[in-house]
Picture 1 (tube, rainbow, N blue to C red):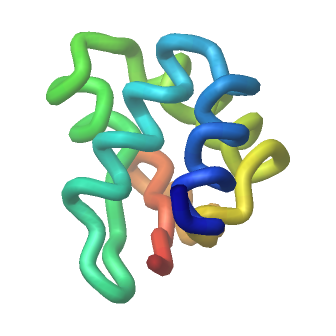
Picture 2: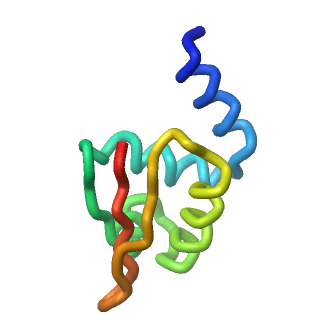
Picture 3: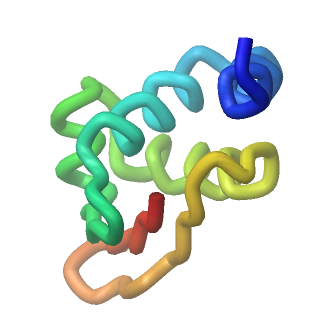
Length: 83
């Protein structure tokens, strides 16, 4: 198992099911630098945008796999994701 695989397994084990789903979604859909709206992530995963926002903040604290930055709040929260 490579170092990045070990880090992924460790981070994933400390995340809740919802957080793991959100992280997997971001990793799958993010290119080098991508912007996501909470409501669009929520629609894809069957969550509320509030659930996405609160869980992304926790993901930011628990994992270094990707960088997530709150980018804007007009007409919904936008997240800047850097892989």
